[in-house]
Image (tube, rainbow, N blue to C red; front, top):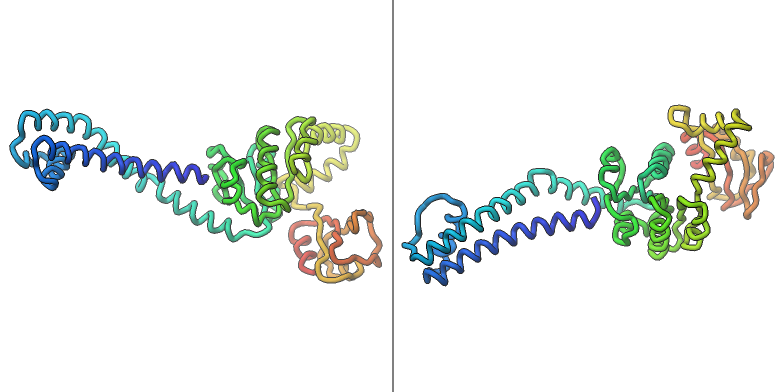
Length: 328
């Protein structure tokens, strides 16, 4: 539930209470002016009239007082019922529990560091969420369509507009490592990127390009990199035709139910060392390449020295990769 939704709920409760107070004041001051009663007698008469308890008149009413009472009953009883039902629904029908759940969720999000934000849970975004979940990354979902979040209750979700600065801050963008711009249109993604970049200039942003011609615009707006689903789909179709065995291998790695092999990058953190030292830990991860000073070395030899800041490209399951990271 987004901040705007929460604000609407509070406004609704405030309006209903305000309406109740106004109708009570209307009746009270009406009797004071017409019948010259004191404040308490006028208030008491207003309450028993709206509540229809039938206690009888506090004092004998004049003709004008009876006309006013008829108006008060006709106009006030429906307002009173609406007010009571609104307040009741706020507490009984889950709105209050949603507020508590939201506060608890925002507290959890505030504690996150170096997490990822997925903006848009459509066809692309849902696959991003699935991959982040499988590889045990922390993430927050922002989605404007509340219905799309109904089956994602196990994740940290915010129902709101991802292009809204306040919503992005609720998702912890200041402390996030990366953001996925997977909204439905390129225009929305561009606006999202600009807003996100203004809040956190260092965040990594991967954007979806609906139109191939929008890729440069997304980069100009501040995206770190752009993925073009149409281009990837075309390359995949060609690969299915000319290299089916390789495609089947990738499917085994990535598709649900086919294992959790992944190609990951592991950064050297502690000190320089030879690859043979890293391999001696026997994590089970297969070393594919070394990324150092902007260059790749494929299938590096075991006596290659890796320095702090270098990244090793490996293939393995989640446990193997995490085991290797623990020794870096």
